[in-house]
Image 1: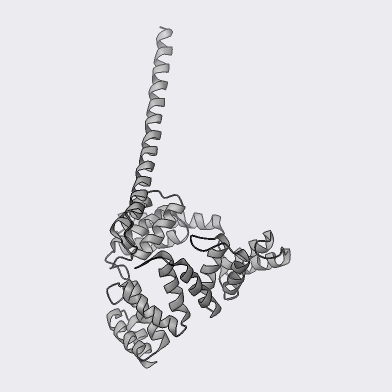
Image 2 (image 1 turned 180 degrees about the horizontal axis):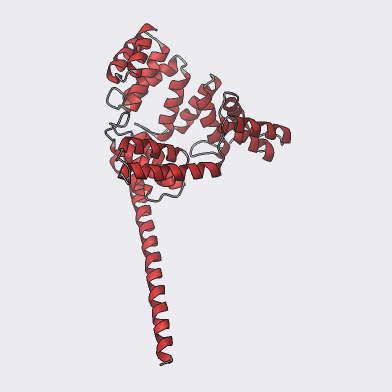
Length: 325
């Protein structure tokens, strides 16, 4: 335990490289939290070069001793294919077990996935509500709000206006922000990020801009999510972002596309062409590059139509004027 605590103190002091050494020493003595922390260091690239294979090895050791956080991160790696093949079946098993062991983040993540269904994971709204209840009871305001909607609509649970009202009230008491408020906040944060990134009227502060881009993307701002994907793909000279994080780049690019930021198609094309954090897949790369080209030509077509309309209007006005001369 002492070695793990020393690693934590060094990490908090910003001595990430030294913290990894002590996490590994702690892990080698069988400390569960030390095993997880060593895995996280290699997963995030904090204090050591990012290495998904090494991270997976440590997380597997953590899974063997039933560490819920190790299960959660390994589930994410398997689901996204970070550093290897995708395995949604095992990802689901790990999320399930981590949730059963009391990890609220796993409960929230798995509950949301089950509510909608996803590639390789079938929709199961009854199980979804059970997992989201665990997360909600642990203080997750978003899951509280989702449970309120579930009880209101009878999705995965029996309709209960009383339960619905109670969960909505608890969500608001715990700081839940409605989708409309999140959109407004995201837009405001994105504008602030642009100001600091470009230095418009303020001293340029790229570190501050990155923080604001992250905050905006977390609130669903599509362009901020696309920018964040590119930041993670390239890696930037800021704490925690020196090395590329291909798993995060992939996730943010997918979210950006889902939210309507079609420029993210090019980022996804790069990821699959080069095999950044996923197995190289030239068919998928071509798909995303082609999507990017299609969007460009649609925009170009719309632009040309506008030009043609303006020319047509000008000609009509000119003919009308001539007919009255």
